[in-house]
Length: 138
Image (cartoon, rainbow, N blue to C red; front, side):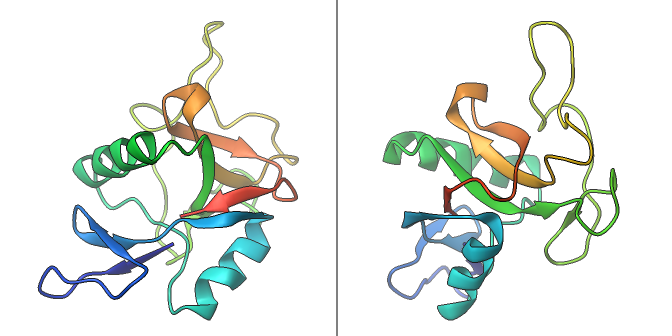
């Protein structure tokens, strides 16, 4: 989950990663449950603002040893139209989205996998996933 930092300070249990205050909830939740949990402490699922912030968060997750986590995007409202939880549109394709060895590009499984995760198996690139799967949330 994330909140923006003011003056580089974050309220516990959030820590400053790049320009955002982030907190990983160690319990796993579905994507919708994860948003609710974030809201209970005044945050929301993580939104990637730019490549630099994305890189810093990926390094943070690697250092913390988390295999995967939910972040704040979905195409549930309109299939194929991925939007961040703040309402802004997402860019599809590289450099953020995973690409399989076969050349197939995420997001895949249209109409089925509608929520966004960062997954260490894909080097913390974006991957569409079933919203009902359980993940930690960032």
